[in-house]
Amino acid sequence: MDRLIDRPQLADFLRRARARVRPSDVGLADGPRRRTPGLRREEVAQLSGMSPDYYMRLEQARGPQPSTQLLGALARALKLTADERDHLYLLGGHRPPAAAPAGPEIAPAVRYLLDRLTDTPVQLVSDLGDLIAQNAAADRVFDPVCHVSGQRRNIVWAWFSSPVVHDLYSAEEWTDCGRALVADLRAAATRRGPDDPAATTLITQLLAHSPEFAALWTRHEVGTYRTRRIRLHEEEYAVETLLTPAEDQRLLLFTLVAPAPAPAPTPVPAPAPPLVTTTR
Image (cartoon, rainbow, N blue to C red; front, top):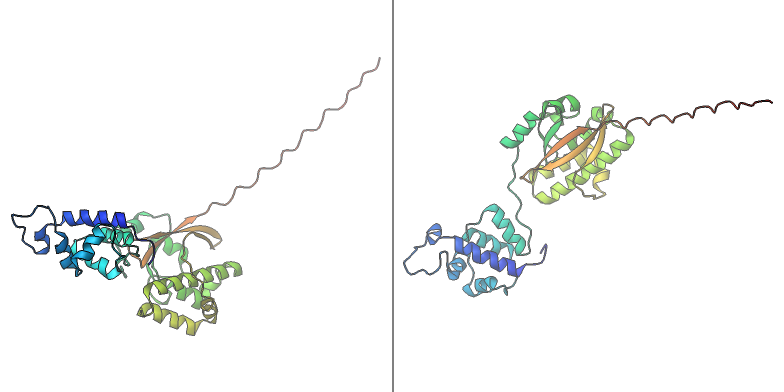
C-alpha cells in the first residue's frame, strides 16, 4: 500500500461512475423497468468478479481496502479512462499502474517542439539514457559527445566508454555527472523491474566494460536527473528535465547561462580641494 485509502471519496466516485455507464455499454439489456440511469450494484459486482455485498460496502464507505487486481477489474467494468483509472487507484490507496511505454516512438507534439526550438539544444532520451532524437542546436553542441545512432546512442555508455567524452569535462564535473547518471540508471532499472531485457543488457555491458561504472554501481545511489548545470565547450548550460506522458521518455532542455556581469569599479573619491589660507 502506497497511501491511505480515502473511503468517502472512493465510495462517491464509484457511485457516480456506475451511474454514467449504460447497460448497453457492457452488453446488458437496458430494459423498461430500470429505475437508475446506469448499472445496478450487483451488475458491477458481477462484471468485476466480486460479491455484491463486498461492492455494496465499498459504495457505503465501509469496506476493506481493495487490492490492485480488484481496482483494475472495477476500472474495466466501469469503462474508466486512463485518468479515471489512476484516480480510482489513488483513492483506493495504491499507486496507479505505470504508463504505457513509448519506446523509440516520437509523439507529434514532441517532434514539433524539437523542430521549433532552433536556438536551444533539446534532446529526447529514454529512461535508460538512449538518445532518441535531438534538434540541430543539440547536434552542434554535443558533437562528438553523443549521436542518435551508433555506439554513442546511449549517453551512459558513451560517458563511461568514450575518451572523447572524458576529455571535455573537468575532474570534478566528471565525477558529479557520472554519479548522477548511474543513480538515474539505477532508478530506471528498478522501475522497469529485474526482468527487463534492455536494462539488464546495458547494465551487464557497463559492469564488464568500465571499472569506474562498477564502483559507482556498488554504491547503490538512486536519483532522477532533474535540474542541473553542466559546462561544455567553455560554456555553462542549465539543464531542465521535462517528463513526457510516457514513463520511459524525457525531454532535456539546455539553456545557455549568461556569465555574471563584472562588478562595477569602486568609485575613487575626488581629492579634497587645497586648503586656502588668508593673511591680514
